[in-house]
Image (cartoon, rainbow, N blue to C red; front, side, top):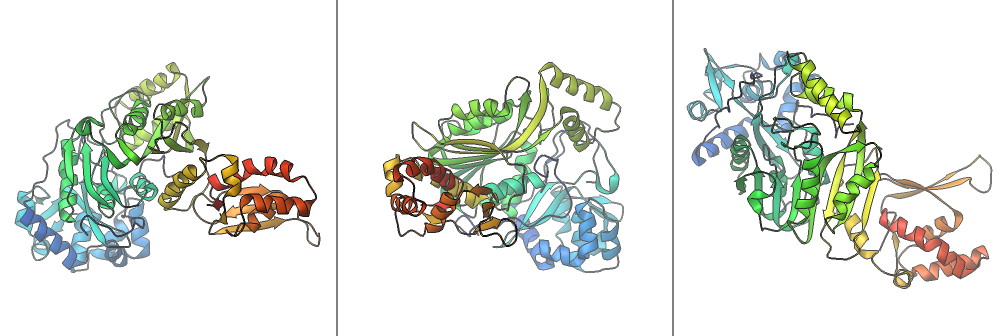
Length: 525
């Protein structure tokens, strides 16, 4: 499943849909342990670069149209040969930029000088001289949503064309499946103050700028902040960047929205800043949940990707449930995948380029022994959403959902919190309420051909989590009558008459189920 796997690093996917809003419209490097220089461009230099990229048509659609389906699909697999065959004979500005950055290939200086402010980029550390050619030092990659085009600055993609080398510890990850997942999960309602915790290359800040008034982006890595700042300036958005670990840079502040893809990898403690938080086990994920809740304003929402340990003798729901209980927030936690410890170690050692290195076996053994010593028999990956509701009886749902979903899920996350608030009423108030069938809900009848009555009635969602539930005759009849005209109590009483059952007993039987159907989005107030 893509959310747990280390990110694919090929052609940039388009961003999810978000509403228009308010705030601004490597060749693989050896790990020397030395922090590489931060690229530095003045504001005027950034404007010149932006204009050059736009003039060349260096956009997601532009690159894909240039490469064609075969080469674009190959680049999604980190293979550049088909793309080079397409672009090597093309003298256009778009082809030159695509070779330089998307394909990470050297380009003759004479080809780039009419296209880019080359001297400025050389002085700023964005490109470097390679004989008569220029090569990229950092990646500048097109990104887009349905409102417009962006560019994202990050470190170059390691592992192109199978050439693996250890990933530098200060590597700043570019566009990837995890960042896309978080962007599609995030609630996109207008907000005042937003926190992009662990900004990396600054992708989430771009999305937040569509609908938030003020954005604070933090990271423990100076290099990440430098690249994220260049991403923001290149796209003309205003972000307050701060250096520091977790919530230390925003101590005492509150936010209406926190979005974070933290370094959640479960390990004895690693040193790759893009994945390792410097704390053992799943402590980073726990800290993000517990400490992040304390940074939420009233009604504020926190959304995080997370990993958690499956410890023998304790259910994962109990473990993560303890984190959530400490927040006092409404909470929705979904586990998407569980990985065996050995597979998990192999996965992340491959991701950091350590597979086949001299220290691979020792690192593997140390990591796996740590799992055994701590009774870990699996690692779960999932999504955590919190809302500071201010109630003494918060709504909490912790579930496993490994099935397909339809992204973006941000609207469904927002609606779940709305429904949780609406259900915070007693039975009398629920009986007096009016409900309607959710959009995109279908009813399916399953049975043998020719039979008068179906064996099963299934209610199926066509959007969001794509849930499906079996419904009895009374439930199906109730849902079918929910058009907002009659109250819940009136519908149940009418059903009792039709079914020749006691109305009081039917109310007692159906009301808990009605709450479930509202909570899960089959019905809405």
